[in-house]
Image (cartoon, rainbow, N blue to C red):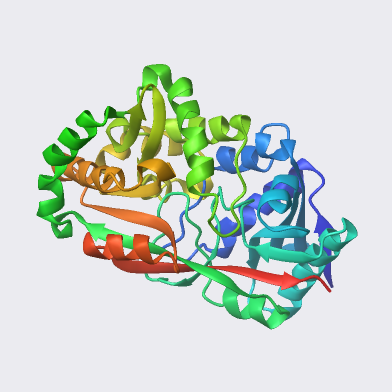
Amino acid sequence: MLRIVEVDNPKRKCSFIDFAHDHYATDPHYVPELYIAQRDHLDPSKNPYFDNAKAALFLAESNGKVLGRIAVVDDVIFHRHAERDTGVFGFFESIDDERVSTALLDTASKWLASRGLKAMEGPYHFSTNHSCGLLVDGFGHAPSLMMPYNKDYYARLLEQYGLQKKTDVLAYRIQQEDFPERLRRSLPMLEDRFSKAGIKVRPINLRQFESDVRMTLDVYNQAWSANAGFAPMTDREYLHAAKDMKLIMDPELVLLAEKDGKCVGFSLTLPDANQVFRKIKRGRLLPTGIFHLLFGRRNISSVRILALGVLEKYRRMGIDAYFYARTFEYVNRHPSYRSGEASWILEDNAEMNNAILKMGGQEEKRYRFYRMPLR
């Protein structure tokens, strides 16, 4: 008999995390998240996101077997800044059975409605500042770092329930050899322009990591404020996320533009550690996963451009083009990097999409945000 149970103890929390590993056991493109990272992300005592949010996790079970899972979130900052009276669902996984997906989504809807919310959107894990969206095109490719992956029938299950497309976001692949040489050659000219304007671009300094990260927070919250579903990050939440990234960070790929000691733009690119994580069985570092983590990064062949933002006042100076050119100039020199993924980009952001196409980018994956009124 099918039943939905709330995750209310450590055993069920473990089942919630482990279900994905079993569900994708034969899928060659699935990449397990590190167990310790996912456990901490779901833990209100360790993740400062929960300073302003309340979540519930649910499992679908039948005869002792887990058939699906879902999370729901009431995020105060999200419905204050992004979507009023809207709750979020995420971490959705289900076997290909409409009874199971409907039971999970019904439970999510009722939980959100009980808190006075009028609409539901997602999937976000837990917000658009985290892994988000449903993969709807590009199933022949493994996901890049911090990007989602799912079964190809999930869109059908969500749409059968009544969820409708809110927007799509895109992931572009840029091969090292396709990046225009003219942009790399523009670096000295742009540096001269910046120097005359009192702007300096430098890599992040890992010895002053926290202060450098805090410098970029205002840029992040301002530059992304118009994005679909965006909610600003708090200082605690932002620093927490940055510390997780520091473990795999290549400082030459994290660039800060400064003027008069203030950050006016930054770009964040990380080695695609998913190429290492996919070899770590069930996301467990012990007994052997730790060795993949320690020694595997030297063979990573791709990077992911996660974020690139410039304050409005400085957007016509070529800082964004400089970030891309300097990043790929470094990729070109690096012994193992061969390509980069730029993700995610809103489908209706014509300026950004056109810029990436001109840099040799090709659309590789498409993700969808869904929304529906609560019944």
